Image (cartoon, rainbow, N blue to C red; front, side, top):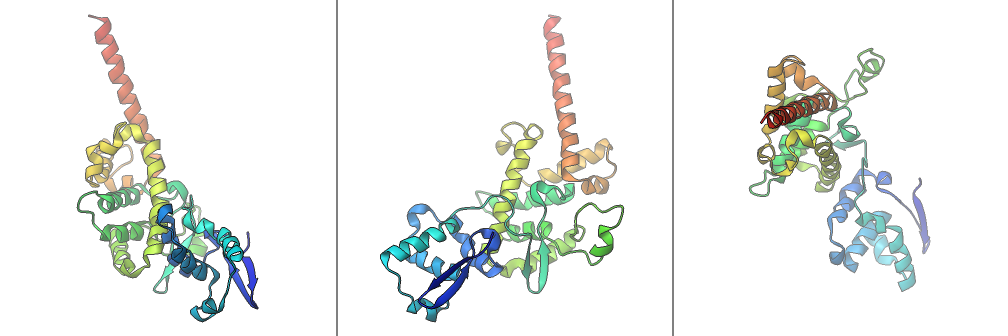
Length: 279
């Protein structure tokens, strides 16, 4: 992996070859291109993209002359800018002097409460009618958190769970969400796409819990269904109080719920078969 070096008319440019190589400014400016429909990508859009990608100042860009062939060749080098990446593009971002770490892939280090809150905000943001635009900031504030101040000692602690972020706290998350109002939309999109890929996989993995046509279940109409789910688990008492349930790793909790759901379905099926046989 390396930057592509382009020399032209005495200028030298170091341009990124992948999303992972973009700095935060390039990411913020270029990432929205992944949401442009192919038919809408005009030559003037490509020129703006080329300038940002090369890191050329307006003055330098005005002086550059490219033949048709050179322009066609150059475009091939940044074609990837118009394609959505899969997985995690960056591990962190910095805003107003504070660095925030993103959650691990597939919610590996996400607790059940964080996941429930994140899914709730995601639902509120993506609602077809009356979406809440601030919900995206709340989603990012919930899962992207500053590094723990004691992270050195924490890594050698017997309780270390691989997560360097501060523990989730709703008050903090909402405070961070307010400050993210001014985060460039391109960076918000980077996180939203990453989150959406993970959330969709999660829902597929545990679809039996949500009903097979989970997308139409009432749970999704109102994000609060996620918190109700945790409250139901707390009532059963396997994991302890609501607070204890919320601290469980999301996968552990949902695997357990899935297991109970499938057991209950099997029992119902057996009872149906039994009554059917005895008639």
